[in-house]
Amino acid sequence: MVKVMTDLLTSQPLPDSHKSFSGPCISFERVGLRFGNTTILEDINFNVENGTIHCLIGPNGGGKTCLARSLLGQMPHTGRITINWPAGKVIGYVPQLLDFDHTLPITVDDFMAMICQDHPAFFGLKKKHHDAVTRSLAAVGMESLRKRQMGQLSGGERQRVLFAQALLPSPDLLILDEPMTGLDEVGSSLFEDMLIKLKNNGVTIFWIHHDLKQVKKMADFVTCVNRKILFSGSPADVLTADRILNVLSREQAFPVNL
Amino acid sequence: MTAVYEFIRLQVQQWALAGIAPESFKYSFVINSILCSFLIGPVLGGIGTLVVTKRLAFFSQAIGQAALTGVAIGIMLGEPYTSPYASMFGFCILFGLFMNFTKNRTKMSSDTLIGVFLSISLAIGACILLYVTAKVNIHVLDNILFGSILTVNDTDMNVLLIISFVCVLLGLPCYNRMILASFNPSLAHVRGVKVCFLDYLFILMITVITVASVKIIGAVLVEALILIPAASARNLSKSMKGFFVYSIIFATLSCVIGVIVPMELEIPVPSGGAVILVASCFFFATTIVKMLGERTRCTKKIR
Image (cartoon, rainbow over all chains, first blue to last red; front, side, top):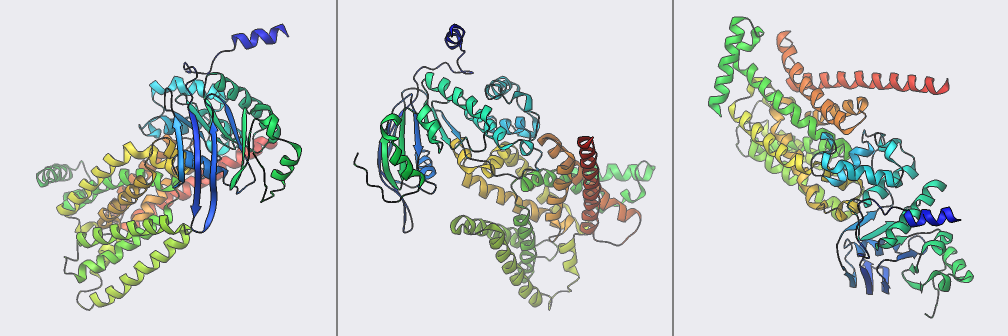
């Protein structure tokens, strides 16, 4: 027990994270999104506090990814999304997957080079980025596989690389789109540790997720979206048994009085 | 530029007379085509890695076929039939941009869309060609369709030089971004990549280099020289560096060998055909190497 305590006290902050409580707070006000006659999202109102882990849950096709992409400014949404940046404005984004030909000869290092420099990736990773890339790959336990081709990695390993790129440069806001898909047990607990460290460094984390057990364990706040907001609040309050049942059974109309 | 070309030609011709270079190098058209090969090879080989990575092989094929229609339009409008550049550039650029615009707007699957556009351009080309061939001998078209080193002149070399320069200048700084945009547009956008703009820029690049290479490789076969060296390089390489370097080497060697060998052996084949056949040899050789490599890896695993 004592050992655990000292471990926690001496635990190193993340690579090149020197900021404290730099994460933004975000407010969604009457956000809506329509494609033609289909309403994807309507009347979305909630806030994301700075320096918290905020999980977004909901059935597939309920508009979670669309909401995240609206936040990233990639969707023509209505209403207003305000991001209040106290310090830096770096967004880290972990996408669900990479769409690429798995036989391509692109190594992990090549991919990281593509992410952080304009200098063509085939000339190799530049010296000035080398240390930062090494640190962020080490943080997700992928340093030893950096010469491996992206296509030869397992799904979970590829997710770790995608996580590593979101740490470069050190983010203030981290947006994760179901990053645990295909992740193994070790990777999953590694992710949890990383997220807690980031949160302790003041990073705001907006996390689309479907593993409710993990949400209950990790999240400070949780919002459930299926076209509209079904419920929103701290996991202990809002994740009640019958609500969970409804999320899982993809119940459409779900009248909740918040 | 003409003075530079003239200087190089005189120099090489002297070598040929002195017996240092092969005898055929005393003809200036041979030197022209070799010079072009050294330009086309690296540029097409490099762009090829992007085309393969972005999975746009079929797309670039369609643009190559559009060059044929461009030629037909050019001759109809009265451009010189050996170099109807204005019509080729004009039609191919419009065609490429319009195809990409439609793809972005309709969200149609790209193979369907490209198939439709390719057929349309071929149909237009076929109709105009029939009309045009009433006026000119159809065999002059062979030069444009399949390449002919005999007709390469200083204008062609200037066009190729400028276009290659522009492609390198635009392509190198945008290389990473173009690939990232195809891997995950959302991630690319977060990383500050102008996804849509680069998409159009890349299509412009493929289009202009295709048109500029038509004289050597021929309208129908240019895309093969973009695709095949990159595909061969992929068989051998384990990283981006190898992929890029091998692709350039294969493309350049294919061009040079494809131009020189038929000339030395006095085989009357179009240069484009010869170049692509050489490139295909590289492709099959590397495929065999890859297959053997995988087999040994499998047997090692079993043991």
